[in-house]
Length: 447
Image 1: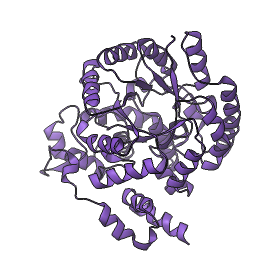
Image 2 (image 1 turned 30 degrees about the vertical axis):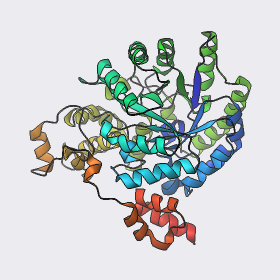
Image 3 (image 1 turned 180 degrees about the horizontal axis):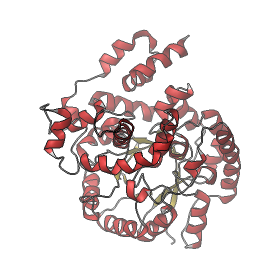
């Protein structure tokens, strides 16, 4: 019996998050939903990540309504979300009660698979999310955040995957958010993981550096079961490799797959028109569609690249783009080599931007960086130089325990603060995650 390779489609979440800062509107997704459901995908990644924030901050859409609408069209295909562990969808750690309620409501509103990761690979920040996702009936996939540093070796990631399996994961994802997992490294990493674990393994990468499709090929040869791809109009560049191309590759290699190439062509025709529209509206920067091998040096994930480009353009500092990218690895080293994935990627990127624009390193330091140096995001992969730490936070206390243990329950406070503006528990959670933006959004909605 031929091995079956399954596909997760990212066009409704990571593909447009990476290419155009998560600005795709639901109205542009809706006509393709039934086609996507009938195409033979294992799952459709369509929620979580930056989609929640973007919906209420930029698109004037209710994110809860979006997932309910998408789920209503999915008769054959699982819906999947990306969850940042104790960070949920925000940029800080949230109390356990908020984490648990958010996961409960996400599943209730239509999420079938919850992919959970922590930006530091600190498993203490995964405990509550894994427990809640399993308790409320979702497939619980846990991801390792792949990166490269003096400590992030194949043995490191293999041991991490064993710990994740022991914590109850239903499947394991290797999350290469920057496209820096090279093909032969992927082969060895997957080989070591699949040799030790009896779990489905999913491989996630980006085409940013030009390695993506080759990395998938070697990963499949080593035992990967599922790959993340994007339908061709929204593939390539800072997004994922193209679904149709990988379908052809998988078939040629003699593997089985459920994908229907004729339906994929119809989906591509729809999203080609969507892509052209966003390019014409100057929402999708054409630069994001190109390959940049320098990513193997600065390791910046796709979603961060498009956001960084957009932000510098808004500041009229686009000429500093290259300098900021060059500064990012230096900041990362100072901070103990955190993987560049949300929220650490944004924090490192913001600090690098300040360093370049201010003309002096660490003249201005965001509060998130200070909280990180206090231990409030978790344990850094490499010990941070104490002189550097003190230069930023002085003699402030540095915690060593699980960060969420230092937080007070927050759900009741959020419910009280938002008051009558909330029509549902979902509204309360929206406020708990993004209070300033959510209040304005709910006030407009309730008019």
